[in-house]
Length: 257
Image (cartoon, rainbow, N blue to C red):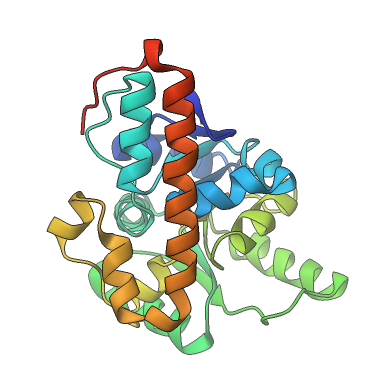
């Protein structure tokens, strides 16, 4: 059992890459409807402010600390000693590598048609033995009941053991929750991984990732769309975390960053 710790009302798993990969591969082999999502600061703040979304995410098997600040908060408040985050795009690569070696099929669901097609091509170039059982870009609107049923049938009939969801937060989390009893495979919410591995967007340098500055790299690339998101969610995260710290000063653990 992987322990979870409450951050701003959201239960975050104190987990590393190896543990997450092992658990998801086991679930995929058994065709269990498990769900893992990856929460950076933005996703954590969204869930903390939306009771419905928070309840759904808290029901997932694994809620990985995608952002370095989320990992730092776990170490600071609970002394979890996590040495690294579990970054969605990196986890996707590790999971694909393992799936390729074991013959587990994967399904790519999300983003734009040209992005998911490029993603498939890049993954197969990197992992020639990977079985991409299917891929599709759903319409950018709510699915009709029939469309939803058809999508579930396509995924289940493909034989995929792992479904990567690249719909963005919180849409991918809502989709995973609503289909956890319908899709006979592991659902892995990876968000920006589709764009990054399709080379539609650039990944932040390693040194910026390690210092929790990935948000700044993305902001510079797309300031018009992202400035308010990061200003509001980053500020809210710091304020809420400060409130927690002031309330629990006697229980804090020295940070392990």
